[in-house]
Image (cartoon, rainbow, N blue to C red; front, side, top):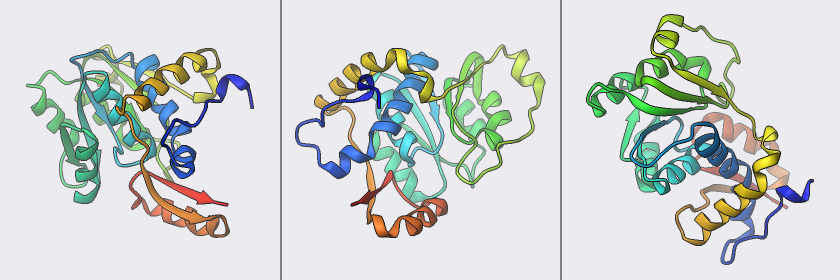
Length: 223
């Protein structure tokens, strides 16, 4: 591993917490700060807010002075998102999240979207975004097909900026990210979200649990 991608375990953080946050926290930070370029006062839509990346993204967006709208599939997940700081939490199985986003922004639309389930949400994200809004796509969803349909007119007629991202392309900014993320952790503005700790011998079972989508935060395997 490159030394530019390493950091000391923050004081007071357990090994389980330390194991849970680096990939998801840096992914969320890179996506929101570097790719979406969120700014204070903006409204940000974060999908899968109770998941590993989503739970970090909510906290980062709030620490950046943004209003956060998040989605989830159950009351438990929506309550979890609100505890992390989400201003609005939408059950996407019961409600049209795009329509709700427009309602919550007075018809203007959100400024940015962090998208983990693009194969299902792309068109509705375009509806939810304001003109010249930004969408950062980092996945198609756990167990989801990497392919999907796109309705082009809303995408280009609103001048929407769609940006793909992968943390593996962030080598040049890692030293800065480590410093900034370390500051957020020390100030208590971001906390690790360990949903469950399981023994390494149950690694196969942990994947099954993960695929159910019922975990809040991250699953940690303990050696």
